[in-house]
Length: 323
Image 1 (cartoon, rainbow, N blue to C red):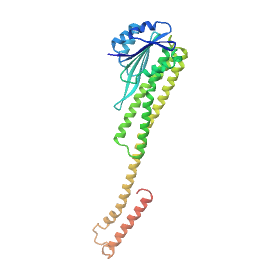
Image 2 (image 1 turned 180 degrees about the vertical axis):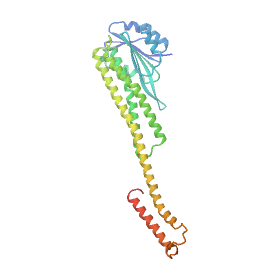
Image 3 (image 1 turned 120 degrees about the horizontal axis):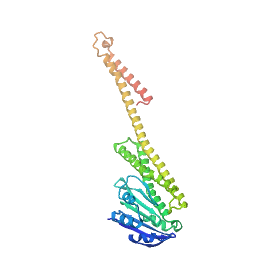
């Protein structure tokens, strides 16, 4: 069962009075007045009541009862139906809360599904700016869309800070499985953010072109401002994805460099150990006539050769940075 969060009637930028859900039609029909209704998790009963009062198109009501997968804008005669999404984080998981907006001459209705940031702040802001609220339904529509986009910025700032921290850690230590899994989750969330932010620009561009009775031409620059804001968010998303890709790329390059250093050290020590092995192999061939075998100082001479050769190889590898 849904509930009415707030319902009020406005005229000339001022709030007239709070109303019940059943009083919307009579107030919306008065010249110069418009009704602003906010619902939370409305059901068929509440939406059916609004359909009867404001003559909502049956396709709009059918669309409202269907959960969607991305923002959209539909026109039904002289009325609009919009679907937008606000991001929230629940137990470290990114989720998107759907909000449906019905707007037409004399009314604007917001239906929020889920526990996203409430729109009471939007109402307070609008009521504090009576000169702009005097525009009516179109200004409230702009304020709601702008507020939805504002909810994306803190989350993207958190992603930016986390990616910066990951980049710094990558330079200090090798990537762990947990790091790779977290970067993968961040890249997936960034793709999901793009999926929900991108269509908002198309919606605002269409609102600039629509010729509706309740959309004043003076409000079109406001919708263009939202479109600009959307483009900035998309640019930031691209930058964040590049940061995530660079973190993995840098980690792989550093890991390859570390492996190369280890391989060079192994190769250097193998070469050093190969020298005495070769000497021992020569004198272990069991030939009967080997001059050095009968030499009194042969053992000391061979050991000296081994020590000298190994020392020379060690010094050479050390000089070239292999050890």
